[in-house]
Length: 128
Image 1 (cartoon, rainbow, N blue to C red):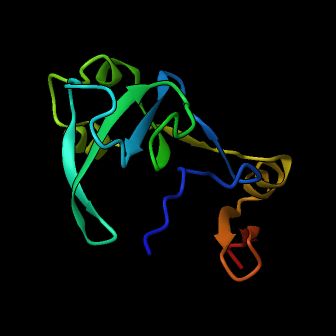
Image 2 (image 1 turned 30 degrees about the horizontal axis):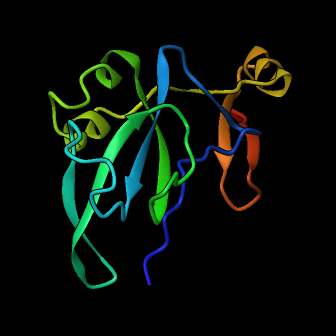
């Protein structure tokens, strides 16, 4: 069984950058909407004839079996139907790493601010 998961950031560490728009990819629609620009067939749980398509905005499944929300660069969201969904998503999106006062103090003391994945927090790498 496939799981569909929205794009999420750890908001303690990151925030979305400017110029983004959410796009919802609706899966398992079984041609409820007729022909839609950007529509494609995909294999889900062994079914080959499952229709999927992207829609601007953050939507729920709305009559389809599943949906996934992903942020994309705003100018590319306008290209839905003209450019493949893979091309739009492969451009990625902007995210900003949050620099807290800890990093400012660290760099003021000639250290380098880093991230400790074991502790899941920023740390100061001192020159000595």
